Image (cartoon, rainbow, N blue to C red):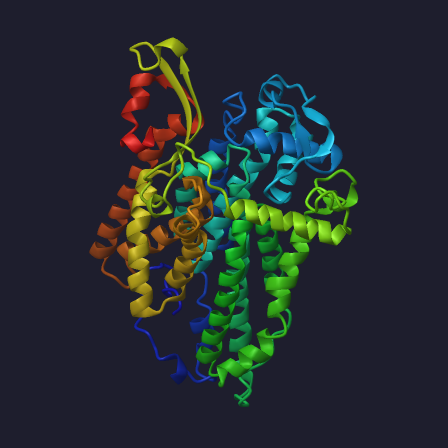
Length: 531
């Protein structure tokens, strides 16, 4: 179903049976591709202003804590090794202390380090170290950039989905104020890169959806259906780029792979709906003829090419781990391709078999309700008086903004009912995107008893805030609603956004590593499982 003609994502016009829409009917293009409301200028200026606000939050005090935070102990030195040697190298045991002092003599020779994640995220971190040195600001620069750009992409994607600049900006603002996205934008670990590349791929899919529907509408208006299911649309470059982005997501962490399957299914489903709406039957024939030859390019070749390209440093040097195949083959060298494949297989086995205990491990069923956030950094001063009346606490707690995540739980239920009753593509797509970033973790937790952490949910955060945005649109209502109805709805939405802002401000010291009195810190621990 198309978005509301007035540009709001609220109650749409009554559904019209798509198979009754003749290809020559007037307004076919408007039905397939509703016009965008507002000016082009504000369509960019509004999201950019929200992005500037989000970027300020992320870059302000980026070098604090002046310490190696959480898994930065792996990725900061690995990034520097890639910058200087092309691959990850084994580092000395006191690497954290050396990095904090700015000492870059952190490698134990030139032996390749066994790592369990592909290189791309670390390559991106290395860019910041190249620009600003091996400092906390330097190794966090890249995550702050992509975290800020994710705000812009979310705003633009939501604008395209709702046909409303206002609601696009609301979605971007919600992402800017989410605590988990904020913390991951200020900590040099890999999950924010998966989120970024998945979001970019989804945005390209939405752009392609509009372009495809416009082309089909134009074809339907100029010719009668010939029984072949409509025209063949060719390679569709946005989908090629989407495939590259999905490959980049997998080249950061492997949990991006589920989105390849889901996005391929979305493309096929959207194309089937578009051909039916345009009057091209049999639509399955048209989709198979148009998409069939290209689906392997979009969702196999392009992602694989991006993934392999991320390993260029390993292929180009001689000292990467298992470079000659001997390390994982009982000391017997093998060919380069066999060595690389065996290395990747070993990484997969490690990931599936991770069972080490951690006080912050969590059941993914509790992620949406913030059952067990992850403490990335904690320091109490003075050490011998922690919890005392004069002691202070400095923490970086990876936790989502409660009023966003708890509202998202309700929003997902609304989206499910919305999709079941109205078959609107927007809530359906968001539900699939959340499922792709969440349900596999539930399976691995239940089936393999794998150790998992709340921040693994990073990839679903943009889809949660867009789901909330769509529900806010339902509350406001369509343009044809009465002024009283829209006024009350707007007041409710405004009150919610203000509450989110206050909530983020309240938990900000926990997110940004501010030093606060212990009593103030404890008052922000709403549940014992947050400690």
